[in-house]
Image 1 (spheres, rainbow, N blue to C red):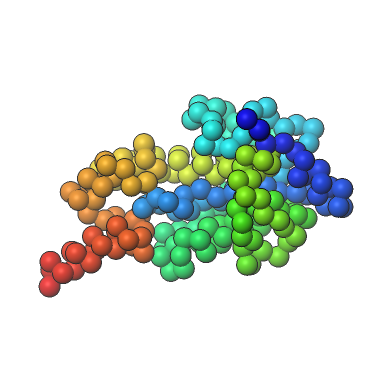
Image 2 (image 1 turned 90 degrees about the horizontal axis):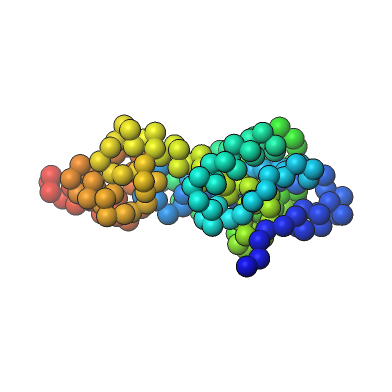
Length: 210
């Protein structure tokens, strides 16, 4: 099984770029909570061991790498809110979060390595896309870990305010517990109203109240 390496970053360095950021987002699929992006510029002399696609790591390993990255790398985390997701769409909102994450780095980015196949339209820096980049580029893998850990922790916090949906375990994804919570307790301010399951519940409620 291949693991991410630093080859894309080295290739960009050979083209004259100095500050190269890996960028990834998490949270496109959930019914609740923000979409979160992270941008990470790794220090080539101090890259934490074990970086990989966040989905291939245990929660314990992700947490340890998250803490290590905050110390060893230039890290920025940004979100697009539920209101922004509903006002635009989830793809556009994820791109808004990516642009914000890049802008939030302490170093000015020369070149961005972006997970996926689309460059955000508002991104003003040189960039390239990498499909399944979190399994190919160490910088994108780092960004995937940071974004996931931050969002998972955020959803645990929201679960304390709204305990009926299981967000501390499902991070807002449509699990059986989450769906049961929606049936029994309805929609919260953290639910994405533009997503079909939530829209259908609200539409049904409107019809019942007419």
